[in-house]
Structure formats: C-alpha cells, structure tokens
Image (cartoon, rainbow, N blue to C red):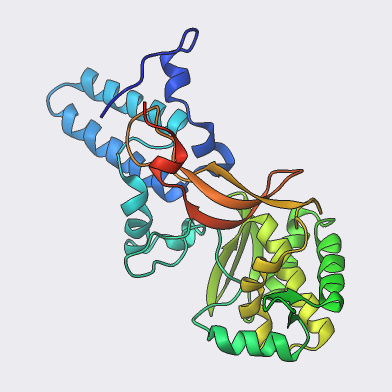
Length: 290
C-alpha cells in the first residue's frame, strides 16, 4: 500500500476525513460491523491493559466518525453479515444480494420478488407507456411523460411524512411508511423496501402515472424501477439529467487515505441528486498513474 506525501497545509485528520462516506451517505451496516470490531478489539486488549484498550476504542470510534470505517474491505462483507444476523430490518438500506454481486446499498424496488422483464416491457408497450422510435430505441410516449412529470411535481412538494405515506400506498402489499436512514422505509407483512427520496418520488409518480394511462395494477410497481431508465427530468427538482462520476456511496476498498473509488451515475445538473447507477469506474479510468 502506497501512501501519498502530505499536501502543504493539509492535516492528518483532513487526509483521513471522508465526508462522502459519512453523514447522509454513511453505510449503517458498515458502521455497525466496524463498531462491533472495535469493541471486540478493545475487549481483547483490556485483558492486558485497560489504558491501551481505551486508546483502541477511542481511535476506532474516531476513525468510524470521520472516515466511516476501520476494517479494510468492509463493503464486501458487512451488508451480508447484517442480513445473516437477521438485522436487515434495522438497516433497511441494505438491498438484496445477488449471486456473486455486491449488495445494492442505495435503493430497493417498490415491488418484492422477481418479475419477467419481457412481460413488463410488453405491458408498457401495450399500455402506451413506451413506444419504439424510428431509431429502434424505446422512448416514453408523450402522454405518459406528461402524466409522470405532473405526478413528480406533486410528490416533490410533499413533506417527508407525506411522501412516506404515498410510498406505502404505492407498494403492492399492505404496509406503513416512515422516514429512516435519510430515506423512505416501507414495511409490511409481505415485504419491506427502502428508497432514497429521489427514487421514492420517481417510482411513486410512475405508479400513479401508469394508473392514469391504464396499466394493470400488478405491473405498476414492478415496472417503476425499470422506468428510471427513461426519466425525463430530475425527480427531486425537475432539473436536467446528465452522466457524471461521484464518490462511491460506501466505505471504499482499503485504508489508503488517497484512494477514493468512484462510480458513473446519471445525476441532476442542478441539485446533484443521483438517479441511476451506471457502475464502478476502473482504477485506470479514474486516475492516471503517478
């Protein structure tokens, strides 16, 4: 591991600090697992020396506070560990795991379970939600785009509690909504989902717009997330969307303070809200080698 030389006027604390992994972007499963690791390390050291154990606890807590993590590789195992321990409902932004893939820590879908993409596409084509253009690509129909835009304008005018209630009404099972972990949590006997507010606005508005144009109810919630591919504007503010790169939303890959993984996203040019993840940026793409 290669550490970069300190920059003039930059303290060690500044180099360790990672605001993009803390605050609203903090990964709570990663925080919980790291806190447990620090506590276990402190207990082990306490057998030999109480003062040394207190130092371990203080240093670990400080790193978690300013950096978001202590243990290298935390994102690879912390969400899985939280789910295996049955604690996922308390850390609702941990998404489902797919085989060999990394868990989605940003958003879930309004629908629970697997759905046939071809069936969803057929239903959206039949109902006039999307249409095939002369270029062979799919596009939103004018009528659905207008309905979706109208509904997004209504939803982003709501306060947090009202948006949570609207999201609970949109899921295809009996549920209650609340605001947790800087997002919208919806829980019921048939399932639980967590959405970032920008996705809650987009998806609930899509469900309402599909109802307006006559899409069958069983298709609406499952189709909401795929429709993010066609978002005409930012759900959060109505601004223009463009592809860009942002710091990875979790805790990074190693303890190297100079290493900041990034991801390609579609984000709002006005408010910066990321509406769609396009995947991680490779090291060679992210930063030229020294």
